[in-house]
Length: 571
Image (cartoon, rainbow, N blue to C red; front, top):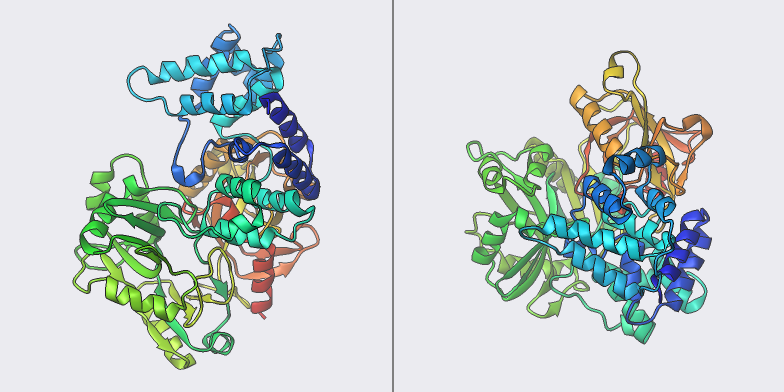
């Protein structure tokens, strides 16, 4: 396929708001893709070159792209910046600058290879080489292709969908409906590589996916927790359960294959280089050839032995100054599940059996890699007491796991349920916080005029399986000065001049500045109420920001079903 054909599909996708129509267009694109390019087309349509866990970044900031565009069109850099300020989209600037049509004969594979070559450039003189190669590529492409190629290194392709929609499109490609979505997603949850999944489907169809198993080095989508209001309801619903502490740290999945260690976050990012102490301890303390572990890394105070709050633990997720932070925030890695061991896929084993394997695997003398403590019970009083004990230790509460259940990858069923401490609630109160997406902000007035922000709009996903975002609350109180400054900074980084097409927003709620759905925040509230103005049909009463959730991707934000459940639970 020529890249200009792909660009024409991108234009259709960008102009389409209907989720079903986007699915059909994507399906048509994937059907027309060859076996040699379908994986690349999946990645490119998401504005990437590889799956997230591969960690390949362009490292092409706006200032470098300005230089590349200026060089491609023999313009002054200041002129490009001026045009960008007017347009708000460098891709549109490039499209308008293309006085010639370019050759336009480059294939998808050729453009992909050139982009990959640009991304992996490193060493002395690499910045200049990146600029020159990008400029040449933009010069050679037709206007529409150049528009989208410009956006990709900036991470702003703006097509308005994620892997979730591609899963629907793959089902539609095969059967002209979405009925195969659930099965395809279950395989994706085990092998989180949308390109690889698409390629298998293209070559072998659905029967090919049945052969896919857990692979060390490819992250498994983490199991998720459901909510229930109290110990009695949990036991009634789940029966015999294991009860474990709920750590307020960084959820990480550790993969070991011989001497090679890979560490992934819950949003599939490879952070091995950020946690060399965990990597070293796995090599020293976990004596097995190959393993996939699920657990929580949490910071602790070496003097008192007490756990550190999430805000301290998350400081360990950094690219620079790692050695200094290891001394400042040492970690313990509490392992609470095992998904794979020495060639054996353990996902379908009951938790009781997986726990037995863990107990033999994790040495009681280990200093960093620790087995998460638990009790096994069918008694609500035992569950409640264990929960209260964890609160006294400064933890969030407990996670309750069905004793004979498999590992429910990527699903929020009733195999895992969380019970958290209720903080400072008024009225009925909520059983849990929500992870919301920041959709934009309102300009500040009075004292906040100096911050340039006085409130922000948050929303949730319509469904766990799609990318539509519904408004849930305006938030204008409860932030410290530093939090207001940080929110403004993040929103400005994610800003877009136009309302993203996946946003459903009442005209009376439109923010002064729109943000792309990239910022995940944890929000606490006293109640959920019915709302005639918010597109979720519900709103938060007395909402307040708890923290930024950099450990979660937008696709892991809460959905409407979760909000509705909290609404029912408060009664």
